[in-house]
Length: 332
Length: 214
Picture 1 (cartoon, chains in turn blue, purple):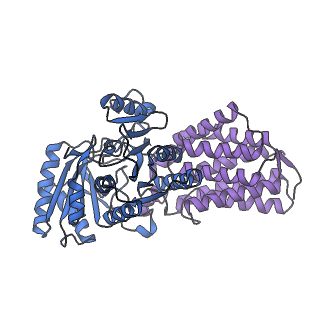
Picture 2 (tube, each protein chain N blue to C red):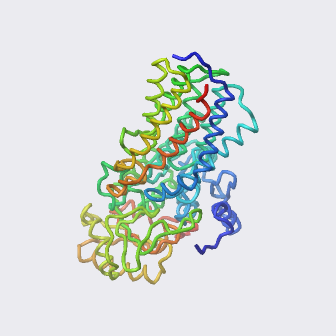
Picture 3 (tube, chains in turn green, purple):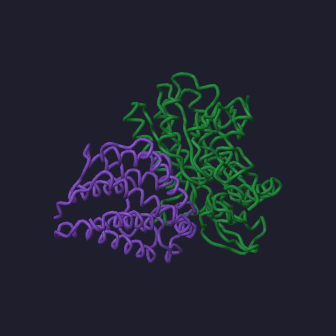
């Protein structure tokens, strides 16, 4: 294992120290591992909290700031944060308008956020609602598994709902919007290599040089199948086809995210976007906006994911609204 | 049913033994998790139980209710993942049911353990054979109850619980995971022991070590 770390156990804490040095726009609670906006949101506006295991950066800490999240709770690498972190964040960011938790669908995240919401309600009376993202079409037997995983749509949701919260929309409206976004988005990923969790020190799975894993999750969970390594054009088909088979994206414009898993260079991501865009055009899908880069990663995994979100005019307007975070920044 | 009582110190000894066992078996638990999960169950449980023993040592609880409450809260706040809320809820519910007492009899301990299991069910909604820690926990408590109710000694009941937990753990190998990260593997999860059931088996191994001979 070759990594830019001091010690595996200190990775998350040391990264938060670096983040604190890097910007004055964030305020870090190192003890509770919470990333806040340095300049809190105005009173009376709903606050957004997300969080999850570390290793997906810029998700979620990189999305704290004007127009997106109010706080992000960082867990250990690939391990959900704990309810006391979410509770502390909830108390800190609530402006008396309530708090929306954005939770990716993983067993641990669900349980920890659920406990946090129970504690927040019983201890503080703060009005908390949760929305769960589960957009990964790679998971087929949802009935017999923990269900579809929350992946790429989480990024788009945090942006759009964050902008709506900034406008002053109330908690139940935001919760409905968030559910609507999740229901209208689908993702699919592919891995060229495994990631290596620092505390483990060796690759999570073994993937030979001439093979790829189609339908990979953002923690190295196995995908639908393993195939001989294909060309970018073939891989684009493998990613887009199951998404289009799962949801009709021809009726409204879409936002497309071509996301890198962490170790694939941008030049490959641009190339992949071109292949994906070709398929979408051929399929009669109207791309309203796109996002290309590393937005929800899996440590040092090579590969990418495609996310499509079917949007209305209101969502596009919220997408275009100003955002000022480390990960997304425009209109300011 | 046995009239033997269990002291707060014995319960601390149980937790201490559990902490020792997860530390000793850290790599084993992590390897099980690497096969069908995310390779952190050992390190997460060691972190949690080390924090538990530190908390108990720093401020020794005066009642059994307080003891289990501290254990539960510490696990919830240090373990993370799914194991934190599951083990945490287990001990929190045990604490509520035990109450502000300094000793429990066998029946009261069984009641507390059952309340803990109900907490696990409420939190994770496991069914039997979902390939989770519930598949070691439920048989262990069932065996413990049957043994106690047949007027066996606490020692015999604890050994019965240990055996049942181990059998339950081993039986998870042939199951398809239906909960947690392992469920994404589908049939590929067959042939591997569930790491949560393995740590729960350690909990009852510690239980038997402390209470056998009682």
